[in-house]
Amino acid sequence: MDRNEVRRAWDSVSETYAERRDPSGSDAALLDDLLERLPETPTVLDVGCGDGARTLANLPSNSVGLDFSRVGLDLAAETVPDSRLVQGDMTALPIATDGVDAVTAYHAVFHVQRDQHPEVYREFARVLRPGGTVLMTLPSGQFETVRRGWMGGSMFFSAPGRRTTLDQLADAGFSETETVTATDPLGSDSEFVFATLDGD
Image 1 (tube, rainbow, N blue to C red):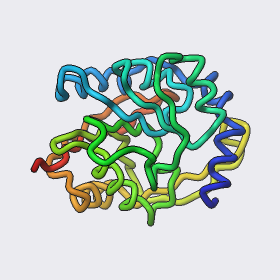
Image 2 (cartoon, helix red, strand yellow):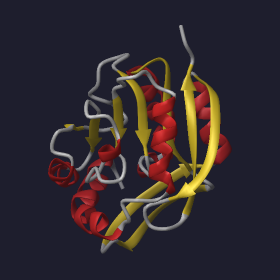
Image 3 (cartoon, rainbow, N blue to C red):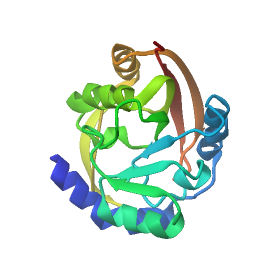
Image 4 (cartoon, rainbow, N blue to C red):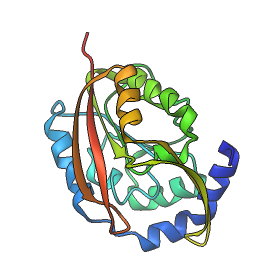
């Protein structure tokens, strides 16, 4: 799937995904750990925010929700009406350089073709202030597939593998990483990584 096909796929399944996934769970609790690492009034960019119930609703009020799907953002406007919402692609974030203290990307990057993942991580590094943190899902394996019938539609998934992902984060300037396993929105266990951007 190209990026426009992925966007259309999310437009078609966003409402079903929001209905079926659990807004609670231990991966949502990781946000508390993230906020403890940040300044007192941080600005957090939630990449792939969807309807906002899982992450954006649990972030500070000045956080920014970004999604590729217009339908997802419309749902987020209902769920988290006071949040700032932006439509955009994580491969070219419409966010100022050094503009945020943290980036969250829950179950998001693996919907981008894996050969573009280094580009995504460079974008995360660009928009983060020095010493900022990324909290994102860490793929357990290497894959590239279109899953037919996913949430009643079709969805693209792509990842280069766990070790390669950690290496790509390091290449983008993230020197410190910490991994943790948590329950994802559909009830499965997923690994997450906290990655800290090098300072000045």
